[in-house]
Length: 491
Image (cartoon, helix red, strand yellow):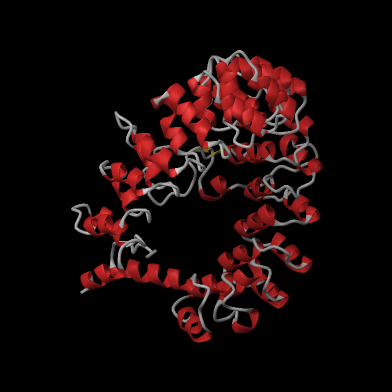
């Protein structure tokens, strides 16, 4: 299939072509050299794609390509030492994000005079001693970066939350560039201003510290006992981060389940660490988003899930708890007196054959509709479902990969037409010409049907003159189109 060419200026088109060419896997040495000579970004892209090796790259000529190879783990240690003292801080910053740097290079970058370089190292280093050192950096932005790094030790992360044993930061990006006290206007008229909308500093680096706390609370390596102290913080963003932490106590989750803000309660509801007690509490929440989050919890008790079917929109996809259910649990749920509970089981399309067939014969149309696309259903069972439930299940039966061609033809001719069935039939591998012809009569699914190889050649030839260009394109790509017809139309 041809790759669509973007519209726009000649310069944009040239850039797009260069990018696509550099992504090809069949480039020869001469082509690689020609592309690499165009600009630094292209050379770096070729290096990442494996077209340029370390022996091909001079870091003085192609610094971005050399850094790309270091980032891919294919560069030379000497390059890392060279870039660690490069006068360009942007190159030092790129180096700081590379994995597996020599210890002496990481130590040099940790002492870099540019806090943005140190912050980049703080974010990406895998060395706990280096990460812990940067968590105590005098610049608050470096600490904020370290707060997101799982290599930082639990003790150092706790110190970022409590301040215990941690000297105050000396500066942040706000007081580096503004006189304090400063509070940023969220509607700042300065187009060149790079400060975030909530930037504030009175000497204690308020917004940066808040961002540091938020990152620590979201860091899985943070000690749960330190995280739990923020369950009643006035900041919704911080309580939200706490609610998403996976290692809290049952008491902490139960407390957060009563939070006044729905998105905090929803975060608790979907947190894998949340236990049955909090799930039961949140299953009666007034907000549908919270209840949906409970339903999607992988460990929600099945009786709570059954309760939610009567109050909550759960969608057509198998829920995590149903996917994890044992055969015994599935059989019990499939025998529920509530059709909505049986439907939850029917959405899972890897059921044991006997359970699948039982649900296919269910008198509730919503259950039959859910199980209808299940592979392995016999044509007889599919016909029986249509006979019992009619148009309610036809589209889903048409989506069954084992539906035979004659059944698809019957479904396509249903009166009145079921457009959802035509959508499925138009691209169904088992569709016959009889099944596809009604699809051609539908404006929306005509294009799909025009590309189907089961169409008779004479019909495909007729579609070449269709007023819809998309139909013409689909017909032209149809393998049923006689080559001679296409050859006559090529100028």
